[in-house]
Length: 487
Image 1 (tube, helix red, strand yellow):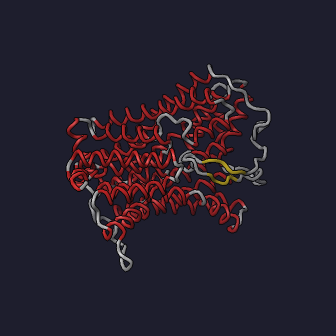
Image 2 (image 1 turned 60 degrees about the horizontal axis):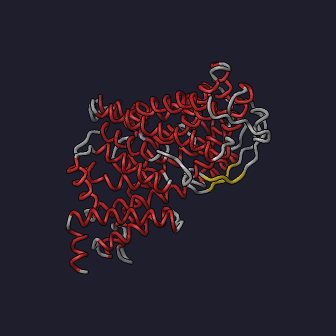
Image 3 (image 1 turned 135 degrees about the vertical axis):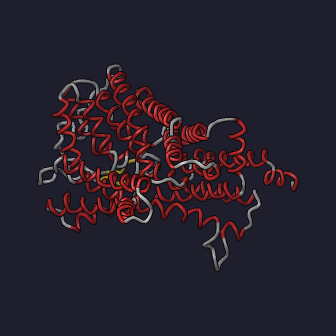
């Protein structure tokens, strides 16, 4: 037994075996025992650490001091980075949703593109609204508007839903402030500006192929009617009651959408400005840090304003006044909206923190280094390995968040030791994020949301949504690979 443990702890093949067993254990706990992912990640991390010979003191600290333990540093190292970003992004999306901005944006785009271009209009709506709004909340908000467009056009619901879903999914996978890219960026050490730049560069072509081309192709072949009792089926002004729905990672959240407000909806220009402000500030900080000399006043201002937390705070304050106070919403009501929107964030942060702890254990025990060395020996570029690992985890257990945090933990040592540039690390983040959305099927909560809201059977959902997600994943990764060749 001692010889076996020594082999697991010190030999490269033993460490690789330990890595494989840790992932198998994680999948078993989540898939078979139905354990909450954040609990499964903690259990797996603790067991791997103990088997690898990590001392109790190093793992959990002492009753007097635990701040330097793997458990606390693993959680704290990432949560301090992502918690304010995800929280502020969630509040921004909630205020924008309640203001009627989605209705205004959709109606303007439908008028702009006309009846024949209505599917593309829904796609652009999903793309723009998907930046500040969670994927599943975007579906709840936009589904009634998709029903209206499908009824007006007299064609399959799939034709209008797929472009919108592709827009929501692309932004959720590739762009801050969504949890996936923010978490991967924090774990791998890359600036949000580079993630935005590379996410847009790789995500837009992926959205065009999966949402516009595939959506148009499959929407003419899978015929689905708008259900007569669908929420909002009679028009965009129909009130939609609240309820509890599954989120994209299988948890639940409360969704409450009040009847249409008395105040007219905000202008499209105002909605676009509020969405663009944090993106432009973050990109400005990235450009300033590259172009301007360190210590100059302009560079310092750009870096300060472009810090993701500061940029999103500015945008939330703008939304609070321009979409709330100025339009007659009280601060008490805005506080209630913000509080409700933050409820589901707790589970996301727990999963991310536990995943970061799991990754920290893999790094400290040498498992990550052994795996990195093996990938190098095989000859696969890191960006390919990152994509394949993330895709395998996604297909196996369904959660995009678990796939991202686990993959980032596995490849973290290689990224840290590889001397990669910021653009290259951002492309690795895109690859990890792309892998985490591939082949959404019955083990993914998002699969059932799409099936329910768009009146599709399991077979139809597999033929439409699952293929769309796979195309979005593959094209996004292919774009990242092409850009990798030139950066």
